[in-house]
Image: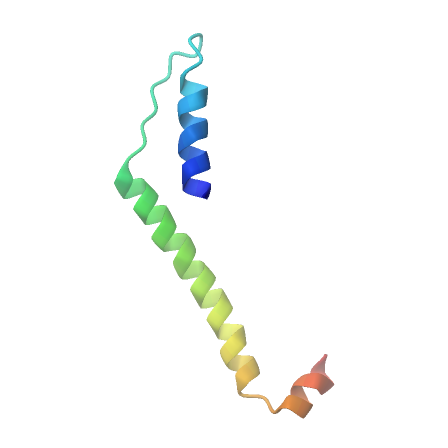
Length: 64
């Protein structure tokens, strides 16, 4: 959804005649950004989940 909105906004801004820009959207850039942000999300989501999974339920409740 974010990629679609970003591409649409890029074309919308570039369609303003006084600016004179052309959209330079590459598939490789979109894929790189998607892989990078997905990797960050997975790493920072899995690490705390694994750490919490190793605790006993009583210990986890006591720490909050």
